[in-house]
Length: 119
Image (cartoon, rainbow, N blue to C red):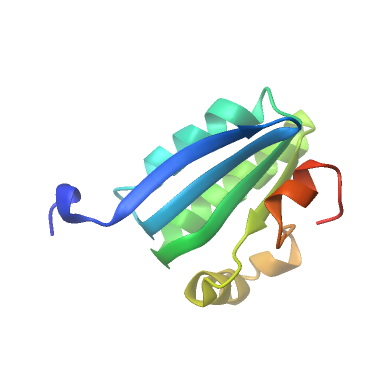
């Protein structure tokens, strides 16, 4: 399958109190750099960032790596970082298997988190 045939999209939505980076489709070796770039572009200047994975259908270790890196960058630079997985059960399962559910903040509602609500 060529890159053009891969079902993937990433976009960001600026909100008053932060940004939501929304990914959909498959996050793998080919698409992870795009998600990483979107996260890196906003983490340094926004007080809160949510990575919305509710539309992700597949994620490999490349996706796990970018999540770990983003969480570390948030701690280093002092911004809040959370993950929204919602109904993406395959994504939640890989996060559980990797042990990341113990160290990441998860949210059901990105807007509530950005407004200062608890993760």
